[in-house]
Length: 400
Image (tube, rainbow, N blue to C red; front, side, top):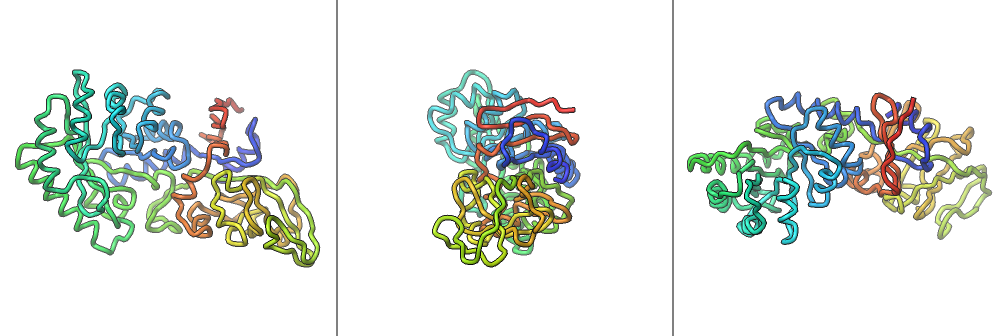
């Protein structure tokens, strides 16, 4: 993250507010999870625009580092990867609309099925080849997926189907980030019994999987034929976000700059509603980032903090769409142009997306996926800028 902050100041055509994504950190995190489950296929979850990091560059980095599969939720997310030239297998986690079935065949995606309506939908668009499908079993999350009994019937139908092949059978944990609850082990038992019954009937999927990031970290027996790594790919341990149980590296820094520094008098109102008023000797800094960039508005009114010159300073007053104001009184040498770090390192201090989420009353996932496209993403590799994604499109950058 320190490298990201130093590289970003040289980025061309970039606004003061920027997110710096370290692709080497993505690769390092892939290697951590591959070491935990060396016999498993690593499925890199790049849904939600790779949790706000940028799906195409992150997917490319993850595959280069050893991921064998990608996972997204929507067809559009999968199509963007295919149109970028990514040919790796893509697990499509979300439900399909009727018009999407033909596109799934055309793009050679691997959809999730959990009932016969999905099978019929895929049948209607069959093109003479065979399509891999992933059968999801609901073992206790009570969300998507077939019941164990229905899953066995569905697996038997897919196994015999001339146009479909059973790529995997999988489930999803409800409480893997609570390692002492026993919930994951109970779900895993149900899953194992379901798979065993399928195998007794001669049904053998290419692989089975159950573990998400938390499951991979906390439930070793769930490291089956594949592991699905989401938030861990981006450097966060959902069970121990402050001190990860393995050496994960946060991949994204969010940085802006001071555009105005001004002293305000006693009682001077700051921002909409004047809900913050200055005290004697108070210095206010203006930072061009707001809820229009995806920051939770709840970070205003003193709940949030940012780092300036290695010092934590509070966000004061109401957050605006495009700007926040911060109290710089404790940083007397602050100047226009100084970096303002929301996620990342400043001096000896580091603030993570988890920290920012705590301040906003939410979680790191929400902070990261909430960053909007008008925040440019600067991608670095080997401490050099390799590309930049902006509202106007992606720019390849050759920097010395």
